[in-house]
Amino acid sequence: MISLAHLKTRFGQYAALWLGGFLFSGVCILIGMAFADLMDATDMVLPLALIGVGLGLGLGVILTLVSRQTLGTKLAVVILALLLLLPLLWAPVSAAAVIAFFADRAIEYSGAYAAFQIGVSRVLFPVAEGFGQGDVLGSVWSGFQVVASVVGFASALVKLWPSIRRLLGPEPAET
Picture 1 (cartoon, rainbow, N blue to C red):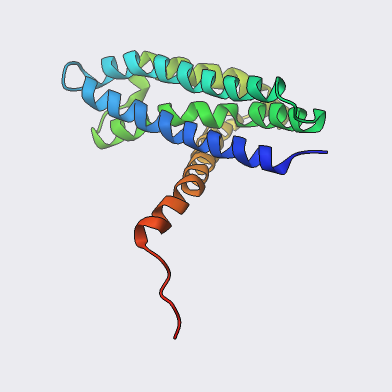
Picture 2: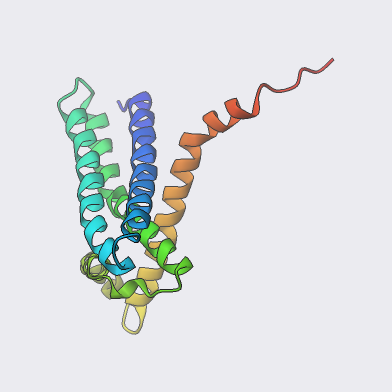
């Protein structure tokens, strides 16, 4: 039996971690830009942000594994963590990409971004190889960016929506 309540809790924590990684990276890069070039700030912040979100995800998985949850719940959490690891790691990287876009700079000049892209390509290359030759890897990379951004945005929106509704006030009563 799988505990849907536990999975929902972990998804909420995942959403908070995704949003936190995005905001942490973005704010730190913007602050770093006051003292250094965008690429230097990105190279300082991204490794720390990637380690932080990775450790956060790992902590959630470990807490589930040592909990009294059923074996099915533990397996579901591990499988979902593996599936959602790359979209989670994309959160701080996407903040750097957004800042570079608005600064009209090429993020590819960042060593940390390039290392992330190479690492993800090593994971995605076997997937792309299974679909044939050509520029499949470029398409898979673009698809990864879109899927990771949608997953992150959706998880953040789901996490924030109750707070937004409370800010907007109660629904008007029908008379």
